Image (cartoon, rainbow, N blue to C red; front, side, top):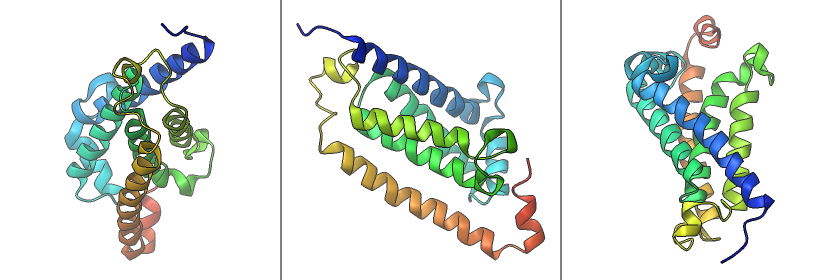
Length: 181
């Protein structure tokens, strides 16, 4: 048996932390858990910031966060899980870009940090303390990393691009109100 080292423990801690946070945020959207608002209210919010249809966007976002977070925590299908988390967080960051970088001003710092950490885990792999390792890395192959990121980049570009087009079509006064929180 291969010896577990501190790199494996570090990857496990990163996966559990980031995966847990992502999954918790997703269940806030889907079920209203952990102080969340649930699917209907989140759908209304998504609609108000340009993601349409709102309820379908909330469902997609909630499933992406819950699913990618759970898979990252388990260390299962790590390339796909990391890429899905990056896509979800890119969509979230797009909403906060007008507020600048730092979170205290409503900026995109937090989703960017989650996205970069998830990307790092997808690129580095889950370590030996993972479901991927137990399964012989059958869903964690080197070629899966660029493939997962390419698919996610294409889908994210379409979704965020459609949102940006909708916002450009809005009257100026309404567009600014969309970014107030």
